[in-house]
Amino acid sequence: MAPAVILLHPDDNVVVCCRTVHAGELISVADVEITAAETVALGHKLARYPLPAGAKVIKYGASIGSMTAPVSAGGWVHMHNMKSDYISAHLRDAAKG
Image (cartoon, rainbow, N blue to C red):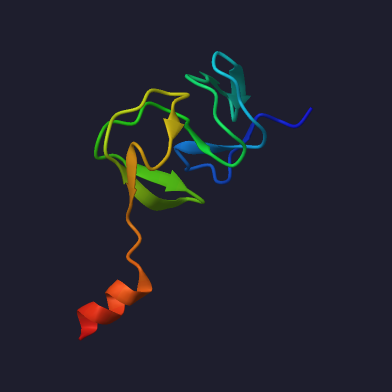
């Protein structure tokens, strides 16, 4: 069976699912144990630690967004509770204007 999650960088506060993770599943990663709060699909993120609203989401050792709602350790982190900090290329070009 594939590992449940992968930690991409030691500074990350999220882990990435390597397979579907089921609600209640206990996951050990980098000396931290988390329990999946809900079933989360392959490729999606779980919080490694509790993340309050406004916290930066760190993946690959870099900020990829900010939490719009709090999530507990093991909670699903996706667009329903985070916003991207990425600015689209067409918006950057328009700002130069």
